[in-house]
Image (cartoon, rainbow, N blue to C red; front, side, top):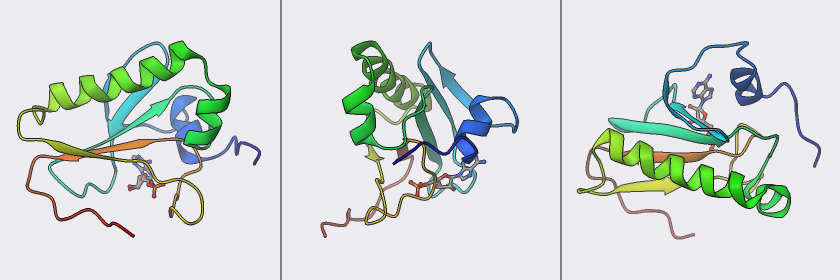
Length: 119
Ligand code: AMP
């Protein structure tokens, strides 16, 4: 699937619309979800033009992949949720109910979460 240059996260990356940034490295950006589901709800995105996890795994460099994972860990650390735990969720494609077609990991925590869906 071709990358939608006008998706909301592409526009955030271009600086066209603001975000509440919590962390950044050379290849990843993390910002607060606009509709948080928990005290901590941060989205971590690669800076490259990747729509899904599959595209990122296929086309992203090892450096980009590492930077994305390290950004997630840094966010969890900075948010103070490591000790009590938190959830990472990555919705992909239609069946995954992915709303924004730029790869993003949700980092959710700060309270006891419900059981994760298991299909
Ligand atoms: P998903 O269903 O995984 O694609 O989730 C997309 C997420 O992006 C939702 O949790 C939205 O609340 C969030 N979102 C949409 N627009 C923005 C925005 N401008 N800034 C921050 N988060 C956003």
